[in-house]
Amino acid sequence: MSQAIAPRVRTLLLLLLAVTGALLAGAVPVSAHAALTGSDPQQGAVVDEAPSQVSLTFSEKVAMSDGSVRVLDPKGERVDAGKTSEQGTNTYAVKLHSGLPDGTFTVTYQVVSADSHPVSGAFTFSIGAPSKTSVAVSDQEAGGGVVGGLYGFARYVSYAGFVLLVGGAAFVLACWQRGAGVRPVQRLVVSGWLALTGATLAMLLLRGSYTGSGKVGDIFDLTLLSQVLQTKTGAALVSRLLLLAAAALFIAVLFGAYEKRDDDKEKGDLTFGLAIGGFVVAAGLAATWAMAEHASTGIQTGIAMPVDVLHLLAVAVWLGGLSTLLMALYRAPSLEPSAVRRFSRLAFGSVAVLIATGIYQSWRQVGSWSALTGTSYGQLLLVKVGLVVVLVGIAWISRRWTTQLSQAPAAETVKASAKASVTASSAASAKDDRKAEKEPAAVRAGGGDSKRAAQLARQRAAVATTREKRLRDADPLRSGLRRSVLAEAGVAVVLLAVTTVLTSTEPGRTEEDAKAATATSQEPGAALSLDIPFDTGGQDGKGIARVEIDPARVGGNEMHVFVERPNGRAFDIPEVKVAFTLESKDIGPLPVVPDRIATGHWTANGVQIPMAGNWNVAVTVRTSDIDQVTVDKNAQIG
Image (cartoon, rainbow, N blue to C red; front, side, top):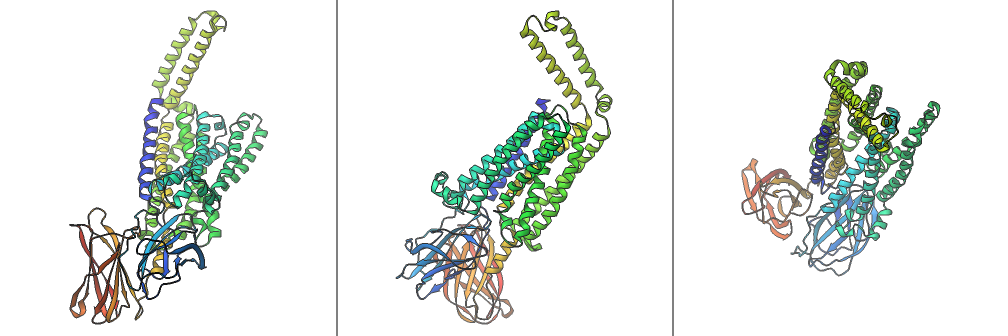
């Protein structure tokens, strides 16, 4: 039997590693959870006089430290005072030195959003007139690189450890109290505790580098660690470690004093006490996520955080209990049908809570149908819902096996369906008995050669265990339940990985709100801004071309073109061209070839718009010698 188990366990582990690697690779760098919605001076603006400060406005509150915002002159030298200050609602500013020269200045920022994720970006403005700049903005996104990958993996391991710890303990207390004395079950729960503790310590060490430099060498920087301890996320991680100390005591009692209790009344009282204490610890552990991530920011946080705690507990009880059931079905000597039946009811209740809390969370984080299909968060959420549907479908099959298992006595089932196995086992037993009869009477009585007596005892125990496993494995109902539970566990591994990536993705509601906040009004005389996605078809050929026309009226206009990668970084490409066409009057195309002044930034002055109307703005983008595409969008000008 152990040889049959090994390939399945290896397959499940390989699936875990493959899915985790693929999803974490797609999750790095993480999406921004706070978007820059405005600045003063504005991106691409040309001001007559040097400003005394640069201010940035974000879609939500962010955490800043000195040096979070840097302003660099055309030579790449810092011209800011370094210290940032809060100027108003979600607006932050940094003072500039006096006597700044004319030219193009680059503003870079790296902050931490309210839901604990790093956010970075850059933009330019000019004093007097645009100029060339030596500043090269890195494509590295905050939270990316090796450190970002390690942090994402630690996040996944922490969720997996929480699920095994809480779900395994709940399965023992609520469904199978005899399981407290089963060694494989003990190892599973303790492994969950070790995984959660190790991952929490790793995240605490990685956090400073993850939200800062991204350098591996900064992982063990004690100065960064002390700064992390003063943040909301650092406090949550430390609280989790303290609660894990209480969880260690809970495990010691569950697999120690509790397992040894024989008196029913004493065991009942201890069960009640462990259930209350375990729920408090589990809810506290879940709250360390709820109080530091998505639920802690946005709308209705007072409702969202308790709902998030219930959601995490429901996931842990369902998936962790499922993992414990799988372990018991394969490794435990026996498992009562009543325990499987009780878990079936517990899992049904967990799924009901999961659906109810999930619907609320989806509404809160997505907010609209367009965000459900048009944002990364919404698309991942649809994948998660699909996996949950598949998992519930497989669980329904498992429930059918559970019903049949509880209705058919195990002994009669084995006798009817595994007669050959029983016969073989009986023959082997008779052979062993005949062999035992040939042993000297002194050995059988326990005297004589004590080593030989001990060896014989071990042989008999091994034969008895083998016979018991053979009888157990011959039960077709139990085998069917094993297969369906194994399939559930495989889907659960993928579901947990998708959930982990979902927690590091910008919520759809936040993304759409940020887009609405950054959309430029098209009132008469106001500047016009168009975001046009493009894909030249070659390697690294996707991005967004932003065309800004000021003041977007008949006559001369100033035009800026910003070319960015999908992650918001400046895209260094060889050529950009723009053409204006007014099809209703058969005017155009009127070509404009802007001048490159910085990485991803082109500009042209005196762009003539001869009359008002709905103009087609076509942008030609060339990303290599052979990869080029023309994309367009209509806009009312004048």
